[in-house]
Every structure is written in structure tokens, then in C-alpha cells.
Image 1 (cartoon, rainbow, N blue to C red):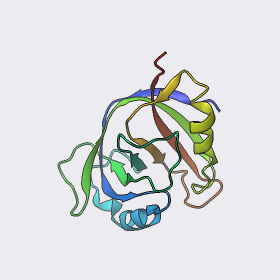
Image 2: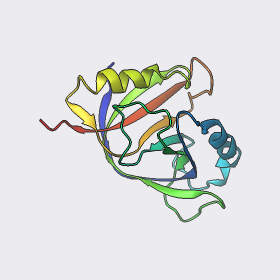
Image 3: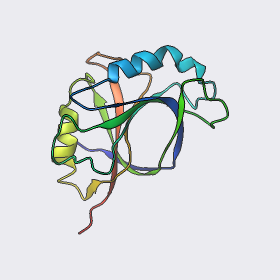
Image 4: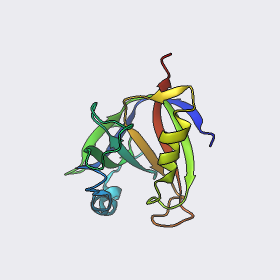
Length: 161
């Protein structure tokens, strides 16, 4: 597993969000609500969809808790916040250093994340940074299809030694 290490600037996003946990996963509900309305976002940068997970400062990736709450977004990157559709919200994704992983497979298969958090990060010169995690779902993304492709972005910083 060889991610690309990238530094990005902040990104403006418009979308919808729900609070959830792994045990009470509302991802399907979130995207079911967002997808028919995505064309209302008139100033998008591209047709790519962005799935964002925002974890509070107490979220512990080292101790799996299926009931730990986080906020999940279904969104699109936009040029500005001049036109926000009704019942949608704005979010500014902070810039910084990210490890990006190209993934092909079912979105329900969590082994890629187990490998990232359990193997790649502990064996790298990086540690998790407290910023949102996100996936870019581009034109090759196909929900529930084993040939689906997406980019996984994990916030990192150099390990304090």
C-alpha cells in the first residue's frame, strides 16, 4: 500500500450532514436525501461528490467503539458560498497534509480502513491529524459495485518523536 502524500488548501463545500455512529449508520439515508438535490448546487467545481467524516476531539481511532458519534457529510466542492440551496449547509474543509489512497471495491468493505489505520499509519513516519477525513467519489464511483473507484483522504502530520 503506497499512498500519495499531498498538501491541499481549504475547500468550500455545500451539502447535507447527519450525526451517526458505526452502530447507527445513516449513510444510506444521508445520500438518498442528497443525491436527487445535488443538481441544485449551481457553482460546483466539478461533478465529483465528497463524503466527509468530522470527528470530535475525543474520538479515539485506537479504541474501536461502534457507538462513537461523528458527523458525516454528503457534499460537493464549490467556488463560493454565494448560492446555497435551501436546507443545505456550507462547510469549509481545512487544508493540510493528507495521505491519499486509491481504492477499488465495495464501499461496504472496511478492510481498506483497517489496513490504513492498523498497518500503514503505525508503520509510517506519520500520525493522524485532527481534521476531517474524506473520500472523493468521481466519475468511476459506482455505489455497491466491486469495480467502483474512489480516493480516500486521511489527514496526517509528521510523527512527534
